[in-house]
Length: 127
Image 1: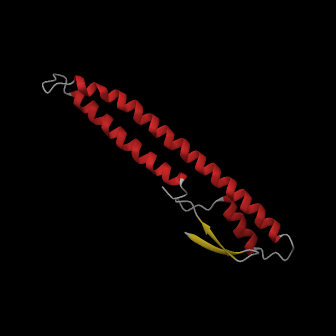
Image 2: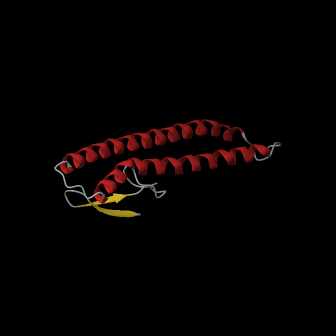
Image 3: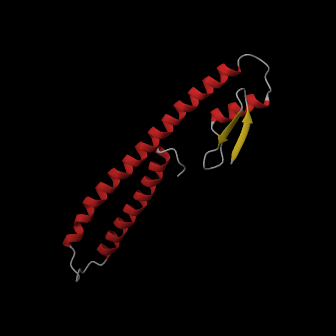
């Protein structure tokens, strides 16, 4: 959902989070716009909101990078566990070992999908 708001220097595009929530900065910007303030503080308010918004974006990017790195590390651990695949023989009596290996491959797929979404968030896109 995108909201257009007028506050001081013209139209401002307000993007919501993927789940439909607006950021705090965007809610403040919209609220101030709807208040139709007639004062000289608009420029200062806009500058402050821009700075807070930029800082919030850096925090979101850093959090997304942390998530992506955690997924990389998880994949490395699972790859080490997959080394057991070399010890399996076609006539393995414990067939559950194949299910365990299958689960490890699925874990890698899940971790990779989450890591890719985190990398997109770090780039400023939506996951």
